Amino acid sequence: MDSKSQKVKLNDGHFIPVLGFGTYAPPELWLTSLRPELVRPALEKSLKNLQLDYVDLYIIHIPVALKPGEELFPKDENGKLIFDSVDLCLTWEALEKCKDAGLTKSIGVSNFNHKQLEKILNKPGLKYKPVCNQVECHPYLNQSKLLDFCKSHDIVLVAFGALGSQRVKEWVNLNHPVLLEDPVLSAIAQKHKQTPALVALRYQIQRGVVVLTKSFNKKRVKENIQVFDFELSPEDMKAIDGLNRNRRYYEFLPGVGHPEYPFSEEY
Image (cartoon, rainbow, N blue to C red; front, side, top):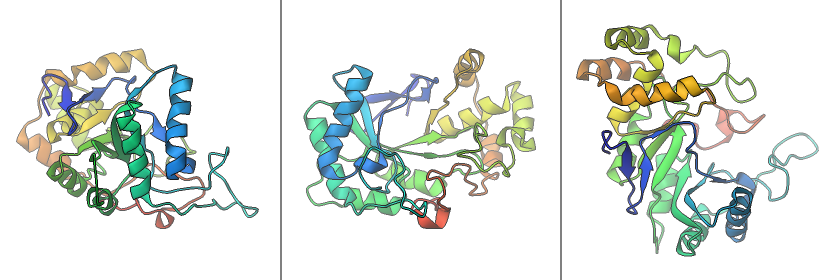
């Protein structure tokens, strides 16, 4: 990663921004479309909605399959999610075909742990490795082992929730402390005359992590650019590393606790 050029080269030769300024977010293959025969139609539907011929990056949203259909979260009469049985290696092969067809320049994954990544990487006849793995990542959940694993396979780790969360009760555990109020982050921010948010973002960039900073506030989007105007010291980085608590803010499947889905572990 070259943070000065503000972009990172993927393992397929394409580039993505080091920092998403509230506008960069790849379309994702939803949970109800993981069957291989549904992958291309799902992407084509997204392209039609976006009025595009192709996208730069297309990723598997979560390594969990739900029953195909029009409902985003299909449930049975008891209100429980209806899961589907899908071989993710076959899903990946369908994504490879989408790339070959020119519907997407790059393909990647999201919310995969290292075992799920290994399954793809060790797949017989693998044509393209995932270019990225998009996961929740911030100082309270620094994903250090997963980051090392991804780097060893030339896979870019992309962080969402890099500032903790937007405190949306439907998706986030509001009982967790607010990351940007952490005293260590605040002290480092004061030292550099920056905000705790910029310190949290700079921390990721210096670790080689691509950051999505989704924001609808023009002032904050503009402020995020300042992340390239300063650098954290090794002591700063070590102090922020020490904040890791393996604390996850986001819960992806409504009504489903962490023990029921396979990507709840940090690594």
